[in-house]
Length: 109
Length: 115
Image 1 (cartoon, each protein chain N blue to C red):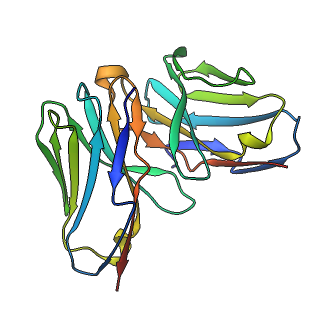
Image 2: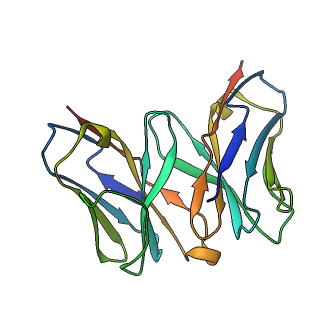
């Protein structure tokens, strides 16, 4: 059974700092991994999808890496802004998506 | 134009009642899902349908019955509601399933409170 862990559970940084969010999964036989953002009281918004054959994926200030063999993915957010404050979830797809509990990020102005 | 819309947004009901949540997607996706997010914010899949066919049915009490009349709609009916059913229920859709699952798009959620 796939288990996904996200560390840390919460993170608070001053504006402008780079963010590093970690995701680990127990079964490396995944097809892809997705990162999502969830704002309070809202649904999830897809940020990046990395296929199992890819090492990284970039979109604007966001960069996600995937090391399938070690069961890890990292989401980097450059030059953080207060608008980046949200909960970030990763989900590993090994036929169905298994979600981590998320990292709640606060960016202080 | 909302991509994945679910109604109602809030439901407050008594134990033992039956309730339904509706979901519609206008993205042309062939796969739809129901997820449950509990009070600890943990998101867990309940059901998945591909082209109206059930493909994932997690260990969910049979009081929960999904129905997909067409590939753009996936409804969730819950019988004999219990206190533990209180949660936020999310509908989502994607193109493809299993190894070819694309990005998931989520609705805003339906917050169910059972008193």
